[in-house]
Image (cartoon, rainbow, N blue to C red):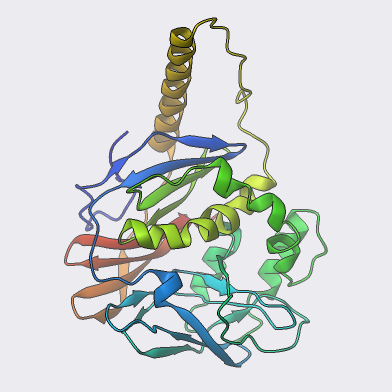
Length: 319
């Protein structure tokens, strides 16, 4: 499998290739390999939650001594006894600098208390069903702006219709985190295509494998995991029993099965209504440009250096 034709046309993706698909229930992941872009600090070492100034205002710090941080799109933080928050946009943060996001959103409707900087902080990425609403709410300062969408998200999955995202992210965490072990992150992998039930749900490309390793759990478990967790497996996806009676026969059967899955995913890609539309530039850092796309069916943000792709987080806006 080759090609990233689903990205905006102005972006050069000639150096990227797709690996063999992996599947866990309704979630299919296609690894992406390509050229690494130097100088971007990984999120776990290059980004720290500083503090919440007040509800909806979050400070993020790049504590590195060199290298710019690209804030993962729709990253969020959870702590006990504090109002959990998520960001509505990506951004650049220079080494040693702090950036305040005045357009962050609270994702826990009736919980008080402020998030604080901690060594043990963990982050998630908003579930794909909420990402279009969050992106369209960027630059709008209103901490409660996502509560209605979160309530609808919960109602969709038979949960109390409240603006409490932790009903899924923490109460279903044991189940969701199984995806990180059932789906393997491969050496040199710096991105992935995510399919839920046969539909292309997201395209995630990192600057390098170290960055992708840092966001892998947040993406596979929390951004795309909930949609797969609550979705039926694709029709006809039941694994047939292996019939071979020798090692060589088993290898041949497995190879045939993998070819069948790859052919199926090629069909999904060919049939995907995936047109990002025109890009709007949001900000610059030296030669890097952060742009937003929102065609109604596909939305997200990406970073380029000239026409070279550095980072991308695009998703199905009608998920």
